[in-house]
Amino acid sequence: MTTPAAPADAAPADSSAADQAAQPDAAAPEVAAQPEANPPANGDDRDDAADSDDADGQDDSDDGPEKGRAARQAASYRRQLRESQDSLVAATAALGVQQWAIVEAAAVAAGFDPKLRNLIESSGVELASLVNDSGLVDAAKVAACIRDTASAFNVHPKPPMPHPTPGQGQGVGPGPEPGWNTLISDAARGHR
Image (cartoon, rainbow, N blue to C red; front, side, top):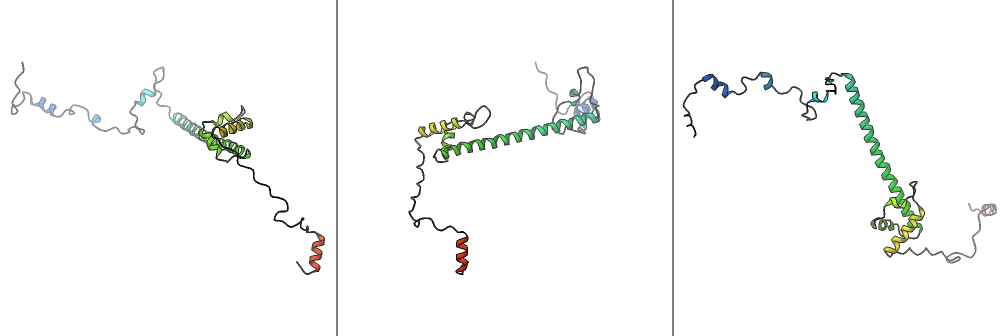
């Protein structure tokens, strides 16, 4: 049971009702049609009045300069915290670099190439496993790690540098040491 639709050229019975229907916001006050004067700066659509209610139901949004000072102080503490965290990360990274340099120096002292450190890292050895309880690099743990890594990758220490044979490529015996005699005799002969 549908009712037939009214023809388009038929006028409604009440013309004032038709005018109001054509303008839906005509009955609303003009204030609602204007945009909000101060939109939230951070894009937050929350109602700030809801945030300022205490447990006792009183509106404390009228705190004035104390609220601004507390907000500035909180921002200052957050900034100090971020700076402290950044400096802690930088110090931890620098300590890690120094500790790996100690491991590398121990590998060189054992006669291995400094690149043995790359093998140690790639074999999954964590730097934390090479330090003692006080945070210092443990020489015994490093020596064992170097030994284990070298045997696992079949790396041998470099042969020691040969020592020169005494007398080979040099004159017989040591040369004269410069002293007063050499200085006086050279001066007597006209040498400077």
